[in-house]
Length: 199
Picture 1 (spheres, rainbow, N blue to C red):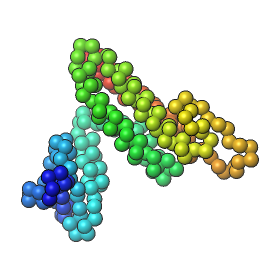
Picture 2 (cartoon, rainbow, N blue to C red; picture 1 turned 135 degrees about the horizontal axis):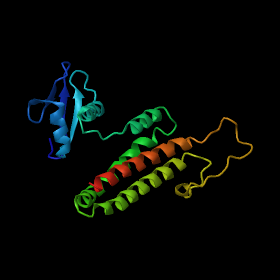
Picture 3 (cartoon, one colour; picture 1 turned 180 degrees about the vertical axis):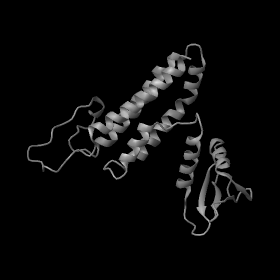
Picture 4 (spheres, rainbow, N blue to C red; picture 1 turned 60 degrees about the vertical axis):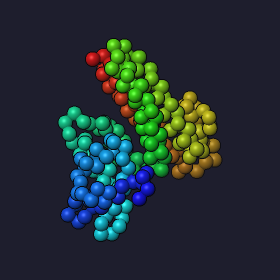
């Protein structure tokens, strides 16, 4: 195995996880530590050979969320995420979330420094900028799938009315309430950071 290749983890019928790199059994907590340490891995069902990495990572998140004081996923966010399953914009959501968390990760050290300083309130401007850029990226992405949005104007909220001869059943693929809820969730996150900075 090459140095940068992901470690292979096998999951057996008894739910035990086996790290083939270290030849030891591991727990979800061990896998969480590997993720935090930047160590990549893939998980396969030992019997079928199916790649079950996504479900195992989701299990790790559920375990972390169950710990007191560890909650990262607000209830409104989880509800909105559930609503997106089967929605016409479902294919856009993973990429948007990936871009958002990547952008936030890049700003994390900067935010840490500002929140830890006596003048931590300055970090709010940084967070607002990250949130604004993420929302603009999402709106630009969804506009490509919406025939009634003028490209380049979505960040300003400008839209084009449906033509009068458009079929009655033709609707914009994204409801305004969906975007409003996403914006509200970003505002909630900003409020939490604001509260932290005042401590």
